[in-house]
Image 1 (cartoon, helix red, strand yellow):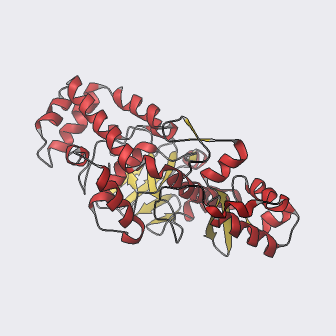
Image 2 (tube, one colour):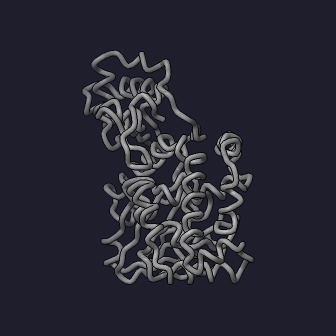
Image 3 (spheres, helix red, strand yellow):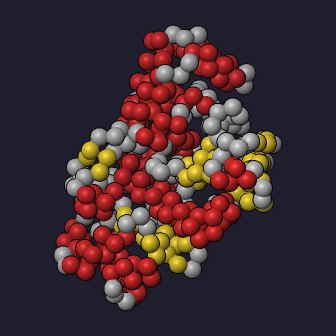
Length: 342
């Protein structure tokens, strides 16, 4: 079990990541690629991704084993700002830290020669690592990024509503059942017994599409505390390569456009009805058409449902969206578990 110990200052400094973290998703997806969990969600993704891969999985597998520890430096905090920022931070990892973390990994498994060279500061080995990560990301993550964004944004809307309604206590209580808030300690199912003392540094909660079951924390207690948890999936959340659907034509009409524009950062059906000035039944019907068109995602939150925009829906409102590498993409092209601390 993992026990995260909060002080009053830690509760005040509790944060929820504003965007999906591209490196966490990349690394954790390696686990999903190799296990057989969640076949209804990940089955097609596994099949499609494997057809695009070459030797990337073989290269990365010793660094990210199916179970147990993997190095913290693979998931720098800059990953939340996009692939380019995350890779730049990864490349800038101090050699001493790389050596230390790979040394820890070598105590539990035999490492291939190129990773041992990486631990000794070989620039060519580091280039090999970056190249493998980028190639794997291009095959396994990039085609599905809009879908991943939509699922995580929907989860954030639920957690954000809990925070607004009841503060940090409500937010921590809203986390998946594998985590339990017994103030001042957040307990989580975990493969090893561990205590994490925040000591006033706060905690960054990172929802992840590819995290399943247990949450994930960094091994090094001196790093900024991060807890990656499984984002809540909708009933139809299998990752797909999204395209603008034919049902987009149903959007014609001022009321439906107003509904799309009124969802904003997330709202319930009753809130949507009030914002647009229609009945709850009408708001629900319009949201359903938008959902069929791939513009809105709906996630149940207690007795209510929470509507959020997908990247395509947001793109229609602002004329384009940014992909995982931080560059603008065309609005017509939308879209455990191992742990770093085990």
